[in-house]
Length: 123
Length: 277
Image (cartoon, rainbow over the protein chains, first blue to last red):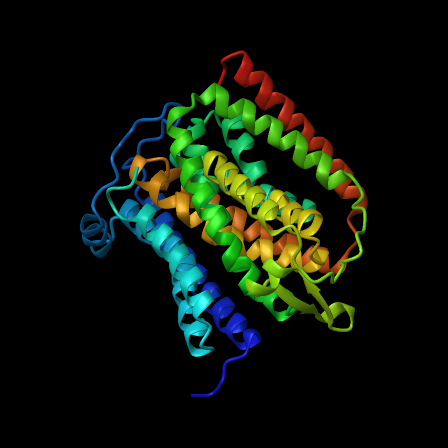
């Protein structure tokens, strides 16, 4: 395998981030357009916080598949949150190719903290 | 208000917030939260939820431009992300414990400090390359391509790490990127070159925000109706702002914006104290 310079790793990651954001923004935008075309479906009182529980991931994707605008926006937001997580995964792979055990361990720690917050069970 | 008008107004305000955030270097989050709360009477929890989403978008969206400059240091960034993500977990935990009044007051104080830090002319500290054992062992070193590839290394690593933990806590508590505190930790405390500090900070903001985003999502702080126009608007505004920054000198604008941020900060503290938030 070719050695991977830090600069190459940096650029690969930055491009990946841009793709992730573009995809997320596009999905959120489509959801927004559909919701603007079908007004009345969404509640508009944001002045008081209601502790609605977030629906399940499966439910969101099912709704998004049927072009439910709220679920589409949620899918976009999930993609967006997933991009920095994927970035850390890329870094682990990059450091592994550079045989940098210390930084494989440090990046894995960051990934575990992120997964702890993202997976159900954390508060 | 009718849904389309509400969304359009929210989008327009978010574009302005993103623009202001990019030009002052403070990020869109510190501007959009008070705008949502004070102008649109949106509950503080929905405001910080939407802001956090826009922070991830802005940080990831501008990464390519920063990396092209070849200045961000992924090792230093990754090492310090251990501190910021742990801090973000604590911050998101505290958000549920604090009342809206308390969060508004903390937010106002952070706004005033941010305005001060962006107004104050930065005292240029010469990056030293005094060898540091801990920094060498953790590979917190690099070369600065803008200064004839001069070698640099981090100093006062434990203190920098601790301040980064604080930056993460603020980010998780208030739904902001807290880039100013991250830059402070790297530039002033760890004595890294300023440009390396700002670009590495941008790289870290997205990962830090992702650590509290999952918790915000499950608590229902990220409402699609608010987050959609805010995310798209702040992203658009900050991309436009970055282009303007490359072409024009914005010193006069910066003073004007600092005044806007001071007013927003005072209003947040006042609203928090009088219980209007």
